[in-house]
Amino acid sequence: MALSPLRTSQPNALLAGRRAAMKRGTLFVIAGPSGAGKTSVIRKALESVSLHLSVSATTRSLREGEVDGVDYRFITDDEFEHMIEKDAFLEWEEVYGKRYGTPRAPVEEALRRGEDVLLEIDVKGALDVKRKMPQARLVFVRPPSERHLRERLEARDTDHVAEIDKRLEVAPWELEVGEREFEEKIVNDDLDEAVEKLVEILKGENA
Image (cartoon, rainbow, N blue to C red; front, top):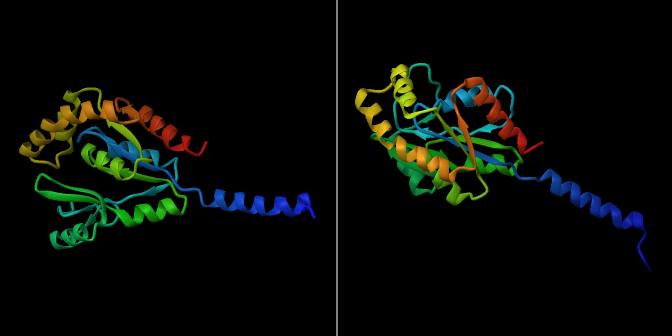
């Protein structure tokens, strides 16, 4: 005997509902050269967009005004090494004598819950994440010119001259890779315009 339309449509509707409820979130990876203003753009964008902000782990010292667990997870070298051995990072690297990494578990858990996740890292780290998670959306934030990088790094007054020079040495490579490999590009010339562009990108997934 043929099943009635009502009895066949109910399981299909329930299945569709479950699939919709289990929709995986989107991973947005924001990167750019040091001094591009990524953090300022992201902080203002998050006033308009609600998503999960990934917090990187680092072995460097906490700077004035930073909060552990908000700006970074500040951990020891031994703790960092233990996480490497457990394959607990989506990406990690040593930068100017200090190590930085993206803990894997919080990102994957948020994505499984259907939350969009925002990850702020450097260009090399973004490419590493993309290799492990090809579905990630790469967003490149850059200043109008390389000259602006030095001006902004010096204005931050958080790095020694030698560190600024090292950051500027890799900037040409980062700018070239960002233009070639990233799906979305934002020129941070005017902060409000850059924020508006990022909000547009982040909301676009759920439009």
